[in-house]
Length: 128
Image (cartoon, rainbow, N blue to C red):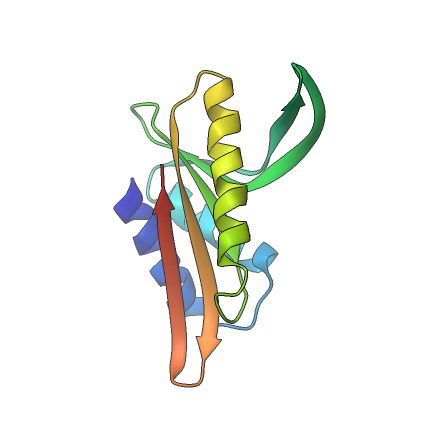
């Protein structure tokens, strides 16, 4: 499934280019992944627990599920530079952990659609 997410992201970058907000990329990624045969849910609530109680929810951009029940949480960004990368990693780890708290084993990926002086760049980082 990881390669399918990368392929979808490259296609979205090729067709749309850079300069759009995360919502545009999220919707295009969902289309690509569904056309590839995966189940996708957008803006999936990821509960935050405190002493056994839910105190808030974060929202994963896309949760992709394959036919074998494997799940990948995809967080999308449209930010120039890597200055926020540590925060993105922490956010993704919390979502993967939250999924695990529900008995689901998931992996996660951050996809950043950015533009640098030399052209369009697609940055992806995996975490388990």
